[in-house]
Length: 638
Image 1: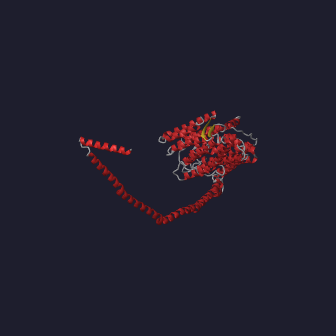
Image 2: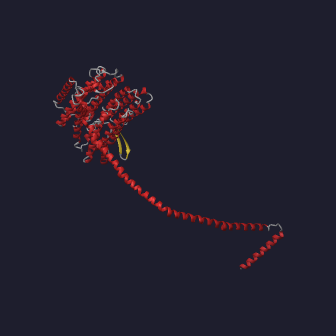
Image 3: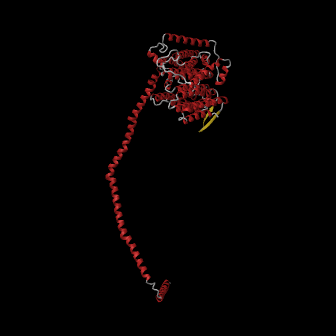
């Protein structure tokens, strides 16, 4: 029955395609499909089913809802339900709405395959399906030539990292004869290192960690529901989830945990700087996604998959809430430039919901996100002081950019040109549900919640030192002070930085330009060089080789005309002459002899008929002559 995790949303995608001519039914059908998927996911989390399909050649695809997968099979459809409802309501006039909703359902199905995978090959299948459907979702408005280009950038960047997962699966299959997660602990030596490195590269690309982070900006070309789903509990979460499941098993790669933690810490700080410098609301939220999943990687590397799972769940809720709030802001203001928003008075309900998400992003107690961030902090300090210090800096930056986004997007004031209107009933329900769920996770502060998290995520939490919470609160206070100072001086948008530096910081500290000069341009140069080599060397050799048979053919033609052709003509003349002679011999010899024989036989026949006269005395004479001749012959024979 584990296959229902794939079949239910997959059937929903097919049904939505069939309903594209009935726009009024799309909202109910899409919400129904996601609600049914949520029911199946909840049942699977309780029953923990497993299923396998023997592909052939010793390859088996296996699904098993266990460990952190129990949380994810509920979280993914739980986030998708309000997001899909929001998309069906806000984009009801979009001609491609049925296709969009069907792709969202297919995307959820692919993600559920990924999180329920019990082996690297099944993980790879879900991994690739998530990447393919995300490309189709990002390029939804494909008639705009920029959207396919941006979707291609996001797709190719993540695909480059996917090679790592292919290598990990191939090495594991070749060495162990299977790709089951259970055999990863037995890998030693170079297979363990290859599997660990491949997994790290693939996860870094999927979860937008350094140096792959800039693709998230390209992914912003997709509609708001797509951004909300990709950045919360699905595609960007896939890499962090895979690391949380597999890193504890790869004991043979001793360096892997430290590398994961270091990568996460670097991305958390860099992403925080980028989010704080961004002037576009969705791009700032995208940069914060990289930073928050960096904290998840820190927890994984520090050995606390429970803290990683808790922060992943919190992030999924408040980040989808923030993206939907940004979508309402875009609909009302027509722009996402932070200097042109301040929609607090225009959109009071949305502003309140967005504020809840921003407080969670800033990790303000007693919200659940604050608790999960404290668990990440405890794990990081347990691993080492430098890692803990990086998490404190990342926490300060989180509070800084979360407060900045809340004030600039939904602070008081109404800019000129703002359209009236706001969130409709369905949008309000979606925003309200996510805000309530975000607040409800404050239960993580209650006694006994830690044990519940450990049981659900299948990991451990580290005990925090008494000074860690005051340190986090001090970082929050410092961020609030910086925000107040910037607001007083009117520098919240630019941070008081020179324009060039501000632009560089907001564009991933020059990573796109570095990638272009270090990767794209060299690859294009190598491609052009190889093309020239192919034209001037390889093709030249082929053309030279082709000239040889052409020359031989011409030589044979020149020699054949006076010689071979002459022989052929002589043979044909002799044959013709022999034919003429044969015809003459046939007509004058053979045919004449046949005709003479025929005439002789005819003459003998005519003369023999004369003996048939009917006169008895003639017959007696013939008999007597015959008898005499017989006696003579017999006598001569003696």
